[in-house]
Amino acid sequence: MTRNAFEEYLEKEGKILENFPADAFKIDKEGTLVKGQFFKEWITFRSQTICDFTGRIRSLVDKYKTEKNPNLKMAAYVGSWYEVYYQNGVNWASNQFKYDDRLSFPDSEIYGENYNKTSYLNNLDFLMIGTYYKTPKEVNRYITLGNILTCGQIPLLGSMSLPDLSVSDQGKVFGASLKNSSGLMIFDNCYVDWNTFFEQMKIAFSIKKK
Image 1: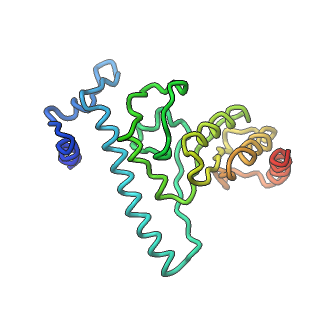
Image 2: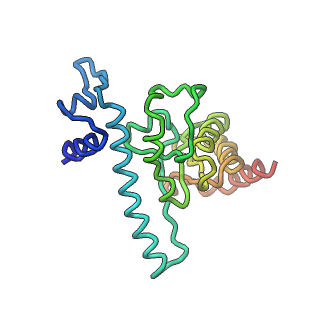
Image 3: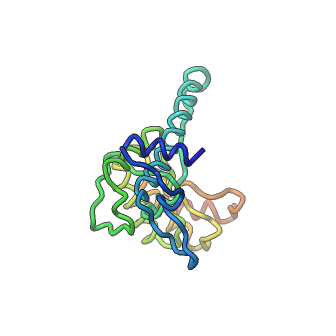
C-alpha cells in the first residue's frame, strides 16, 4: 500500500519508482542509511501523508466544536529537535519558514517549497515541543529555534520531562519556557512531588516576570 501511494506521488512529478525501498533509502550492513535517488521525495511524501491525515482530524474537530464544544482545541506534541525530525514523517514548521544555511541542519536539501507545503501547523490550535533538557540555556535554545520555525503562526509551548530534572533545577527550567514560549507542558503529573512543585512554580513565574 505504501509503495503504491509513493508510486502515485512520484508519477505526479513525472518520475518512476524502479526499486523500492532502495530508491527511497536502504540500510547497509554497517547500519548506515544510504539515500536513494528519491530520498527527498520520500521524506516529502511521508510528511504530506501526515499533513493530509491531520487535515481530516481538523475537520472532525471543527464539526464537534460546532455541535458540542466551541472551546475544543486541537494540538500536537513533537520533539524540538527539528533538524532530524523529518525522520518521523512530520513537518511541524510553518509553511512560511525559509531555511537558512546558518542553521546547519544535516540534511538541508530537504527543505524547500515542496516540503513547506507539507506543514501541518494550519491544522492545529497550539503546538507543544519537547524541550527535554536540564538547563535554561538548552531550553531557551530550542524554544528560540521553535519560534523561528513556526513563524509565530500558532502558540508554542515548551515541554519538560520531570524525571530528567532535579527539584532544584525545575523552577529555572520551567521559567525559561514561561518566559520565552506561550506556556508550559509538564510530562507528566505522575512524577510531580507536590511537596516541592508549587515552590518551584513560584520560582518559574518570578523568572517570567523579569
